[in-house]
Image (tube, rainbow, N blue to C red):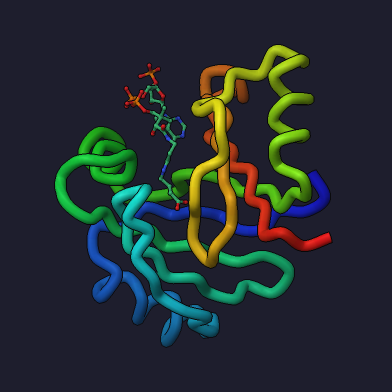
Length: 134
Ligand code: CMX
């Protein structure tokens, strides 16, 4: 884990949330994309040494739709930038961390991602995010 790549924040509607981040807080919008594998539409904002990822659910299923229903809008996950994600996953598994999948999944920006269960991470959902950078 060499850095925090981004902080994921669940929102009901990007169109409503974005003006707050761009106009009120003054963050620069880096891009918007749909990540169909995760059933979300995301917007990335530049927050200096880290990014903010706003996540709007696509449809009524999926992790973000469920999170909003149960807990409302707010911080959803923290993503560590990693290299060689499969090795990192193996190392964590050997240390007893519960991973949410066996194989990395496609994430935003062409990254490979994997999640650590909040139950084995003191109530925090962590993401490993590998952008193929060395
Ligand atoms: N942070 C901390 N705790 C969380 C959480 C979160 N984001 N989401 C759920 N939990 C907790 C719940 O509060 C619940 O705790 P209790 O049992 O004490 O009530 C427990 O985890 C189980 O939660 P649940 O609502 O029953 O939800 P599920 O088990 O169906 O799913 C999780 C939870 C984390 C396994 C699921 O959301 C998941 O697989 N997440 C990984 C994928 C993901 O989040 N994708 C969206 C982001 C995509 C992107 O960044 O592109």
